[in-house]
Image 1 (cartoon, rainbow, N blue to C red):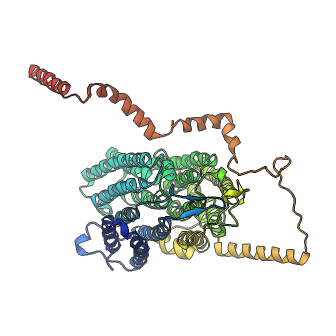
Image 2 (image 1 turned 30 degrees about the horizontal axis):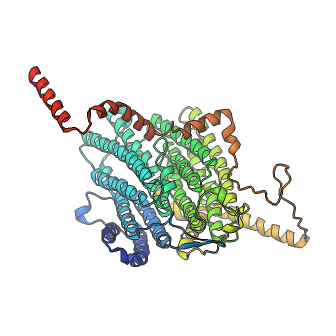
Image 3 (image 1 turned 180 degrees about the vertical axis):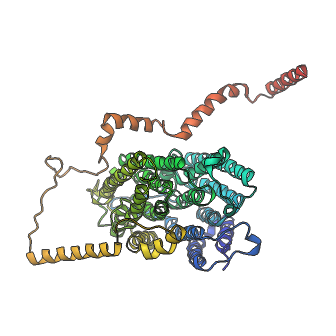
Length: 610
C-alpha cells in the first residue's frame, strides 16, 4: 500500500474544510472523526505492508523508526479528531442555581479547527518518513505555521501565546536551515540515509549537530526553549494542547533528536554528557515549577516539559537501552499527557474553570474521568506496572550503563535527578487529583447537572487503557517487535510486568478475602488537618499543597526569578532586541520628508567616499 496515502488524505481534507461554509459545521463534526479513524487504520496497515511510489523514493524512507513514529501520529490524530468532534459542539453548562453559557473554552469556528488539524496531521506524517532534508524542512516549517493558527483559536491570551510559539519555533527553524546547509556542504547530499558524520573530527559537523539539537529542543519543549508551552497550554483550546505540545510535538522533536544520534551524526562523549545534563535539569526545574501551580493547565504544561527531560536523558546516554527508553518514554508520555489534558478539558466543560481552588468533589459526578486521570497520573509518576514505569526503568538502565565508559559524576547526578523528579511528579499529581475530585466542593451552587458526551469520555478511556496495556504487555507489543530491531539490547535485572501484575491482583484479592472473613469493623473518623479542629465551613482544596517549598530562601529566589521571566529566553532576547533597536526607532518616525533627507545624506556620503 502507498505510504503517502494518509498524507494525501489529510492535506486534501484540510484544504476542503478550510473553504467549507460555516453552516456545514455539523457535517465537519461527523466526517472529521471518520477521516481520523481511516488514517489510523491506514497507518496500522502501512506499518506492516508499505510501499513508496517510484517518483517519491528519493524523498521518503520507510525504516522501522519512521514507521513507528508514523503509527503514533496516526493514533493521536484519531484520538484528537474524536475528542474534537465532541469538544467543538457548543453547549450550555447548567448549574443548580444558574445557567452559564461556557464559551471561554469553546472553539467557535469548527471548520477552521479541523482544517488546521488535518493540515498539521498531513505535515506530521510527511516529516516522519521524509528522507530528503529539504522535504523535512518544508513540512517542519509548515507545522510551525499551523501551530500558530491552532493556538489562535483560543480565547484570552491566545494571540500572544501564538506569537511567542511562532517566534521561538521559527527561530529554531533558522538553525535547522543552517544545520542542513552545513550538511550539504560537508556531504553533498540531502538524503538522511546517505549521511554519516562524526562530530569529533569536524567543527562544521559539530555546529550542524548543535543546530539540529536546537530545533529538536524547541519542538519538544526541552529547556531552555520550553517557554512557549505554558502560555500555549493556558490559552489554546484543550484539543490543541493535547494534540501539539502534549503529543505530536513530542513525537517529532524527539524523533529528530534520535535521527541525529542514530543516523546522521552519532554521539561523542562530550555531547552525550551535554544532552544528559540538559535532560536532568529539565526534569528537576520543570517539576518544581509544576508543584506550585494553581492552574490545572499550567501544572500539566510544566509536567509536559519535565517529561521531555527523561527522553533527552535516555537518548543522551548514547547506548541502545537508553535510547530505546527515551523513545518508549516519548510514546508513553504522549499517551498519558494527552489523557490528562483531555480529562481536564472535560472538567472545564462542566465547571467552566481549571483553577484548582475552584474545583473539588467531582469524583461522584465524573467517575470515568477520575479513572482515566488517576491512571494517567500514576503512569506519569512511574508507578508499576503502568507504561511510565517501564520506559523510566529503561532510561535508568541506560544511565547506569554509562558508568563504566566515563567519569561517573555526571551520570550519578542525572540518575538522582531522574529518580527525585519521579517522586516529585507523584506528589504534584496527588495534589491535582485531590483538588479536582476529592476535595470538598467550594459551594453548593456549582453542582454539576451537565453530562459529558461520549466523544469526550471515550478518548480518555482509550488512552488510560493504553497506559495499562503498554505497561503490562510492553515486551510483546513494543520492546521486542520494534525497539530490539532498531537497537538490539538486553536489560539488566529482572522486570516481568505480567508476573508483577498477577502478583498485584492476587494480593488485592487476598486482602479482600481476609477482610471479608475477618469481619473487621470500619471506624469513620473526622479529617485530620495538622492537628487543627475541623469545622463544617473548613475546606482544604489541595491547591496550596507544597506552597511551603516556595518559602525556602533559595527556592523562593528561584521562583521569584522565574516569575520575573529571568529564565525565559524569549523575553531575554526580546529585551535585548528592543534595547538595540531603540535608537533606530528614533529616526524611523514615519515622516516621508525625513526619510528623503536621510537618503540624500547617504548619497552625499557615498559620493564623497567614491
